[in-house]
Length: 304
Image (tube, rainbow, N blue to C red; front, side, top):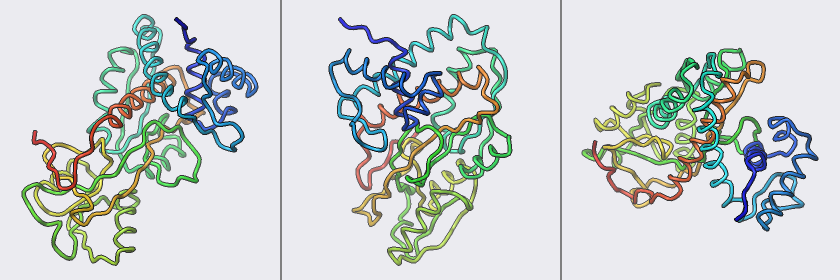
């Protein structure tokens, strides 16, 4: 049996997340050439090519795509074991910014487990729209920011999750069949809102904003009450709503990346521990979502 050194897996995962051997080297404390040697050694151990050679941007082979999910889970278990034994040594505070929908869905479990493993770390969590969070991080308000990323050509942050977008409405109302289409949205600069209005403009479909709130719970309550439809990332769709698809007249809205942004000026051991924990935890969520069957058009998600 072959044993894969965790330092090789960590370098491999950082190369995938940053899209660059050079930036991966900066994170793991190695030169670009040393990173290349580590990747080559990993490929030799597994007898499989992990990256497509000859491309300007980092691109995984089929074998590399398979390995990255395993690597993230192996590193998460490794880091959890180490932190459980060394947890008194990690202390401090971390200022985390995240969109409302993630603080209500994935993050409570992730941060709860992190707090159990690192009781000496105080977490200060703030909710806001992604673009607002990034602007505030530039001003030094946050150490880490989880944000939706809508521009595929823009660089920045480390990708932790790829989300499919889902239209939702109330299971007890037919507001989605009416014209103009009633929308439940957040105020600008909400990325979901922007994507919805761009699509409706291309379709020349009449619409009206029936309810606007920056609160995730407020938006969900309005949708359940039948005030209108909205768009959400797949992992944040709650129970007790109805998913809409092309058979209902609602086109596929593509995907968005969720990225983790660090403020290098404030990277401490506590910040680094939380960043790694969030990355590995979201990766596990990504694997779970990828293996799940998406709700069919017009299907109702189970009630609470």
